[in-house]
Amino acid sequence: MLQRGCVVLYPCTQMKIAIQGELGAFSHEACRRNFPRAKVVPCAVSSEVFEALESGRVDAALIPIENTLAGPVVVHYDLLLEHDFYVNAEFRLRIEHQLLAVPGTKFGEIREVLSHPVALDQCRKFFAKNKKVRSVSFYDTAGAARHVMEEGKHEQAAIASRVAGEVYGAEVLQSNLEDDAQNFTRFVLVERRARANKDANKVSVAVGLPNKPGMLFKALSVFALREIDLTKIESRPVRGRPWEYAFFLDFMQTDKKAAENALRHLEEIAQFVKVLGRYRSAE
Ligand SMILES: O=C(O)C(=O)C[C@]1(C(=O)O)C=C[C@@H](O)C=C1
Image (cartoon, rainbow, N blue to C red):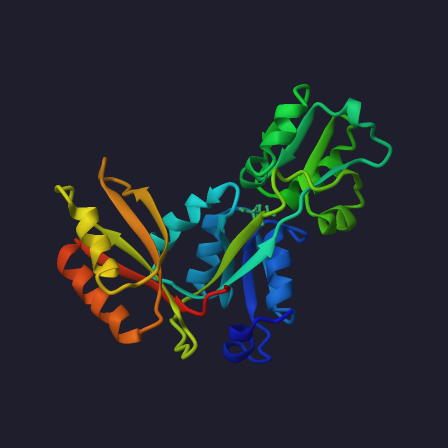
């Protein structure tokens, strides 16, 4: 189903969109659902996704930013801070994990289960229950399914989507391995330029604060004073400056003027404020 913001902002264009992972990855699924006409450009690692966007090889990148069970996809926060790109849209996807193996494999034969670390983290209960099975990090869920099929060993399985199972011809041994059914990943569409979106009601910023008493309290007060709904806060270490942190904030912009005033106020307090994007919330 196309999202409203997508129809308005991206009418009938055949965009090239980079994703981290192979065809059949959840990022691919998010892309297919929201940009069915787009040409998907798979990249092995996240830095390659950002390089493809920087070089102009692709028009946009669709990247997972947080998951309701595993939390933030931290590498993408770091890359957003490093690059001068813009978040122009967000989408949510329900994530359902399957245990995929070479057809004919018996569950008792499996010793290793490969998947993306964020996906493995969504299936902690499965590994706690099945002590004989070791979790192995792989660069991508779909890539893990492909690898298992290429190796052809009954001791290996992958955690990936049903679509990945179909693409690579694997058998589904168990379904819905995720710890909780409320398992969603939020994806953001990143482009080189900000799109003027009159429907935008959410803002993402990165903020640097000096390490002084009460700084975070003061920074957050610019939103509290204006009754602005802060929907997310994340902190990440600043590379090259030990024990300094960048704070990533998402907030709702119901009143545009109040949001602009809050940002101006924040700039007076912070070392830097970087607006990552203004876009329509997926809620
Ligand atoms: O490996 C994939 O299938 C991805 O698209 C990556 C990813 C992630 O990085 O969060 C995307 C969604 C799921 O939460 C698990 C893995």
